Image 1 (cartoon, rainbow, N blue to C red):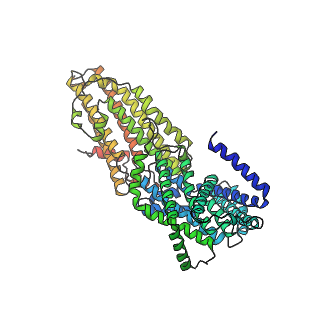
Image 2 (cartoon, helix red, strand yellow):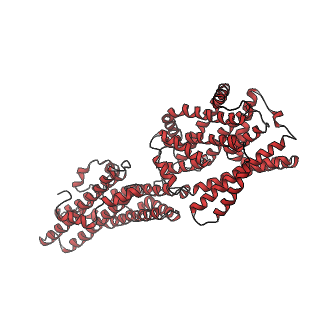
Image 3 (cartoon, helix red, strand yellow):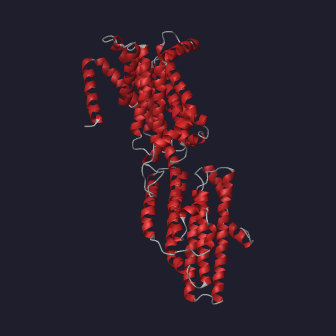
Length: 607
């Protein structure tokens, strides 16, 4: 029997016993339950705004480490949910849109952002009749939940969530106030190092059970306000809550990809180190809190605000200690946590968690198409009898002017079934399940077409293979020369497209150069097609090749150019990340068909 199966019945028995011996305990437990339900509703509400705006802010806020930390602080302060911020961060990491260092920066910031919740509860929630604010929020929130608009419904969830949060705080506060009339839990306070350790463990346990450090902190603050626990024990509980939240992150990352597990590992290391520092230097922290509290005007007996200050202070110290070590932390995590063995046809970037994050999901599809092209690159290279590893690096390109050695056909169908088809199927299935807005939908349609272009190119290469092998070794030098040229043309295009697709992502001025490079390749390809057609006519007129061979050459030339154009069409879509403004710029730069024809007629494109 697993620990989880034992924990749930034990929890139910403990709660049932508490309800039986004390009616006031029911109010406290109900307050916690309502508070947790409010957090769920609040997260659901903010998910409605993760369809583009939040993701774009994240993308633009992580090019510097300080921006990553600031984003984590601001997002968690706004949403009061570090778990949702973590989910978004893991999704962007999985899609390759941010690096591990940036993700760790966001997590550090999220830890600081969670401290704002303690300030709100201690400074506002306990000072006013918070239930009076909760009722209107619940009424308006529930009304908005019945609307069809996703954004309006999201606002409804946010209002409902806030209403339940306030109501939960009210019930916890009232429960502890009445509870102390029958039982004074402060009598069970444990002083000294022993109490510090025991209450830290209790904080960890409570956070693991409730799956929310925020709930543990609120429960601690309301109990402290009612004098049901001592200030020293409350400090230990807050440390435990900080450490406990990493346990839930680790559990959630068990089924995640390697980036998610590394991020959870960084979260665990940060919070354990921060907790250890807080425990070791608890005396110095308490002294600093007293000093700062006096300077900030916090009353001597206002222990709830002092607890909020302590919580902020030790998290701030943790960030200050760990921030300079992020580089080493990344290196350590990448060395210790290796990716699980993965087949070449398994998706690198797609996972079910991205379906709720459209911007990251669209980018993941684009990157997965690069992966699909890479797999197809290997197959086509083998058909052309070129070493894929050397071609990627642009090595020995001069040998392409000669017939390939040891010509023999390869089993394209086998390679397709093992390396291409499963990955292509995963991409198509993922696109079909993804719900996006109109502009993203248009781009997804183009990405799906780009995937189809890759498959069509491979089919053309399959048709070409038989005669490519046969006639590269032909005795007729004219026929052999045409197939050698065909092979060279395709191999060089494969190399150029691979280089462009796998260069560093670029924006602004570089985007124009990428578009112009693709247009240059297209112009050159059309010129080569015209030249090949003229040479073929000349060979037939001069009786250099017979009619039957000429027919085969025409068909094979058609297959080769069709494959090349399909690959160019794919690259023109996949080359740049989706960003409405960037794609408008790209569309403005890209040459139209009649413009390309005009360049060819004028002798442009490399002549």
